[in-house]
Image (cartoon, rainbow, N blue to C red; front, side, top):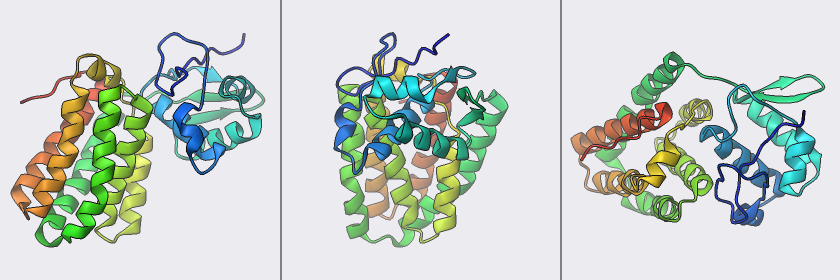
Length: 241
């Protein structure tokens, strides 16, 4: 039986029931392979590609309108990140994650990202912070448009760029790997309820706290922001005031 893998509408936004895949807006990326990686990563993180389900490279390639080679390369990269498992001569299976694993990922991210970001508030360069603001704006734009793939990828780039200001490449790589294991099962519900915009706006608030050298405020906001992410992972799409 051919795996069903309907992920995207024609404009690049995620689709619940359709069978067609398209690179959409991601076709403007530096390469189709990078576009394929972003589409598939976002579909995995959002839970649109279902845990435990088998997906074949030729099927995905046909829906994306590209050859199977960039799809295989993209899925191999995602397999190296622990997001999918290679099933010999059949394709790729999406890894299932337990609540315990998601809790552990959250704890690790809080241990790394909260103190690192708070430390940046003590001595960050306002110019470096301003350079990240376009990413924060793109997160909010994607949230308003309901572009979940755009949201997930902009959010990823934002957080990694922010952590990169600490000057520790290993730290950034660790967080990138942790994020790759995440599943935002509740992100569609956030979008449908209009709550995703509120979460998106927190990114600009984080930057404002950093520029103001508000260490305690930055720490508090980062901890709350990561808590919201954990809620979205579990499908508990709630945001406090």
